[in-house]
Length: 166
Image (cartoon, rainbow, N blue to C red; front, side, top):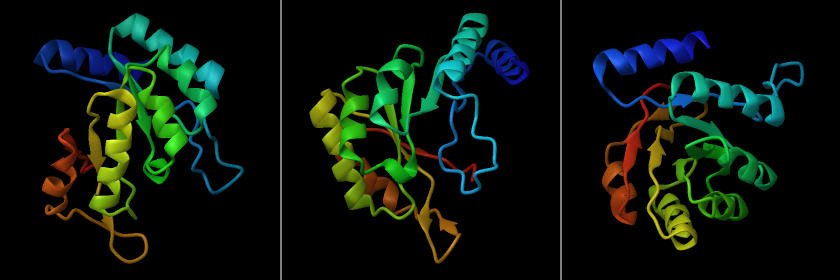
C-alpha cells in the first residue's frame, strides 16, 4: 500500500494519469524457490483494496486463459506478457473482456509478427489495443530499442508505448 499511496499522491499533486501495476503471480520465474506472488485469489483481493483505497486504475498480467475473467472483474487494463504475445487463446480471451488490453511485444518477435497479434486482438475486440515495445533481442540477454520498429508497429492503427525501464 505504501507504493500505491505514494502514486496516488503523485497523481493528485501533479494532475497526471497514473496506473498501478502489480502481479499476483510472476509466472516467469526460473528458480522454483523464488517467490512468485500471492496467487490469483489473494492477489486480486489486494488489488481490489488498492483500487478502493486509492482510486488508481489497475493493470496486471494474465498468463493463462482461466485467469482472464476473474482478473477483468478487478483491473482496468489486462496485460499480456511479452513471451505470451502470440498465444491466440489468451489474446482472444483478453479481448473478449471488453477491457483495455496491453500486449507487450516479445523481444524475440518481429514487428510484422507483432502486428499480426495486434490485428488478431482487433478482430476479437473490435477496438485497438496498445502495444508495449521494450526492445528487440540483440544476441543473448541484451535488448536494443530499434526506433524503426515504432512506425512498423503502428501499422495496426493503435498506440505504441515505448517502455524504457528495462
